[in-house]
Image 1 (tube, helix red, strand yellow):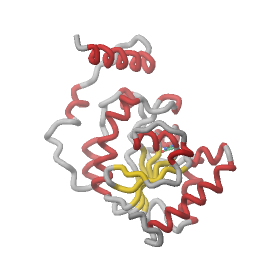
Image 2: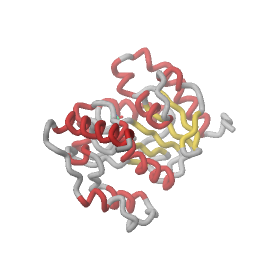
Image 3: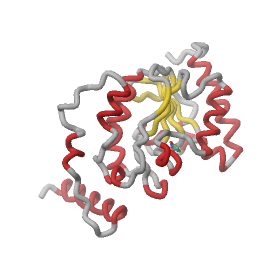
Length: 229
Ligand code: URA
């Protein structure tokens, strides 16, 4: 057997065991249906939601309460991407609705935006990882095409990754947050900025001034006052 296949099987079974103990995880056929070519490229976010909201492509689908697709303005210039739903988001089916989300709403209001005007908010993963652990690479591999489709439908001018995990996941580069901040990166050819996750600001208020600086920069890019080339 090809050693790469053996390594992949080993990792898949280890992850399955981590999530389900010794119960063997068997993917159901409707998970495969979600990937079938019958699903034409959606013309709207609503259509896309209806195509994927029953997703069982990874283990997280079997554990979720609600699929957390995303929320906001379908024509947004600004796309905010978090890591994955937490307990509140899993319960309500909307991203950033807990304490961190309330803080995010305040930050957006300070730059005259809100989640229904000029902004779309979603996560790298659409289902909650158990105990809010970091997304596994296999989960990102399954879920990232959904984010890519959302981006193609929304066509934002700017993407902002909230936190190190969203940043490293989108940039495929595992470096500290400080090394990702204050730079223009690109995701799917769209400029991308990485800033602190609002939950980090709740834990450490020292992160508020640099975050405010980032959002002022974001505002000036969106207003066309700063040219990013
Ligand atoms: N943290 C995230 O990264 N996303 C959410 O939706 C909520 C908390």
